[in-house]
Image (spheres, rainbow, N blue to C red):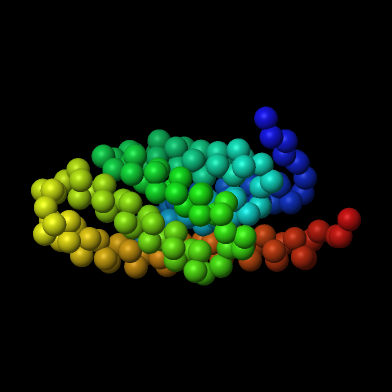
Length: 165
C-alpha cells in the first residue's frame, strides 16, 4: 500500500476539497460542479495515487447519496476516471487540461444519454449532442472556476500562512 504524508499541506488540500464538495450540495446552475476541479487538484496535490483516486470518487458517492443517482451515473463515473487519468498523465495542470477534461466529460456523458435514451441513429446522436451544448457551457465554466479556486486557494493559503520548513 502506498504511503501518504499527513501534514499541513495535505490537511489544507483536503479541507479545500471538502469545501468544494459541500458546494455541490448548494443550489447551482446545472453542471456547474466541482468534481473535475477536485479530480485534477487531487492528482497534482496528493503523493498517493490511491488517495488521489479515492477523494473525488468518495466526493461523488457521498453527494450522490444526497442528490440521487441517475441512469447515466455509470457514464459520469467513467468520465471522472478518464479525467483522473488525464490528471496523472499531464505534468502541469493548465487551462488546456481543464478544457480537455470538460470535453471528455461532455462526450462521455452525452454518449451515455444517447445510448440510454435516444434511438441508436446518427441523427439522434447529433440531436443529443446539440441539445447538450448549453450544459457544456456550465460544465466548462464550473470546471475552470473550481480548478482555479482549488489551485490558487491552496497556493495563496500556503504562501500566506505556512512558513518554509
